Length: 233
Image 1 (cartoon, rainbow, N blue to C red):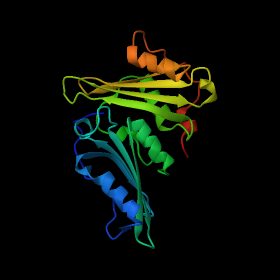
Image 2: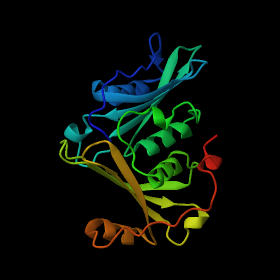
Image 3: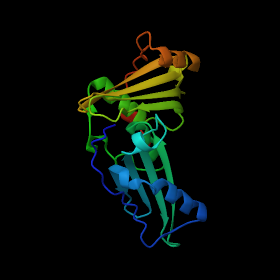
Image 4: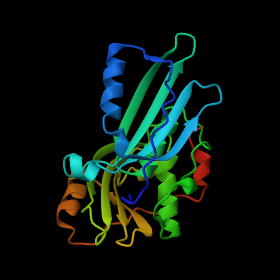
């Protein structure tokens, strides 16, 4: 969410390893084609050397891809230590919490990558922090990503706005299951806010996103329980 991130070369740890197959080689080449523009926010290498998890910010996304392109890239490399081969899986996602959630679904230990170690803007309020954790640690299958758009003007005079539309499959969201998450980074790049809107249909969510003639209809507060209770194990 911050184009001021310093670049750090991704550490894939594949010296002495070969791609498991030709498609894996193609995937690796495609994923790493512009990785000199990746700013690595967090890395975890498992103690047994079998897996590497990377959370990256693509500083070139605003310039090189279609308008609205997601700026976070999550990467999972798995190694066969006997056969000396590797596979790679990656996903481009619009926000850091969704990218981290994807890494957790790939098997990254929950406590191996901590949000407070990331550089860049900080949450502006408690609601932002709660919603970030809600997305980071949501169990697999709770949310279905339907649409996202990143508005990054690429200047230091304006902030960044990321819009994410998802279906919330939690029973508590049955009446208004279509959720819009708005992440707004301040022009100073010192802080950001996240708000969650709730809609009964995707058409209602689309209409609000197109017109924005009324305040975002905020989602109700969740039942009192720790977000960590539902973390991916």
